[in-house]
Image (cartoon, rainbow, N blue to C red; front, side, top):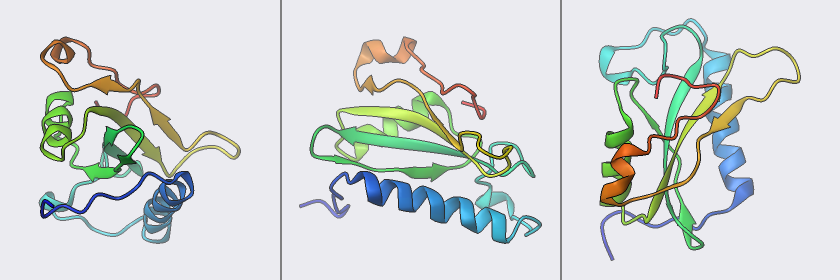
Length: 127
């Protein structure tokens, strides 16, 4: 087994992770970030870019990534994790009441032709 543990995809676990990430932003909205810790897609907005490697139906991972990551960075990372597909996502902390606090692009297979198929979420957080 590789050094990266595979985590089975569980919708409740994914929702709990997203909630924990957003709660962390909400509890410390003014906390300073060092350049290496930049998780917000746009500093100060409370938006997090997420790269989600997927090996359906076995597992899915959600990884907060730096704002400098591109579609190709996520695809390469997902391939290194042993995924067959990936999704680009955004988690939003500062939204109006009852607004959706996340967005996902389409699931994209990891293959050479995918390089021309960027599928950013709508609304997009900088993918």
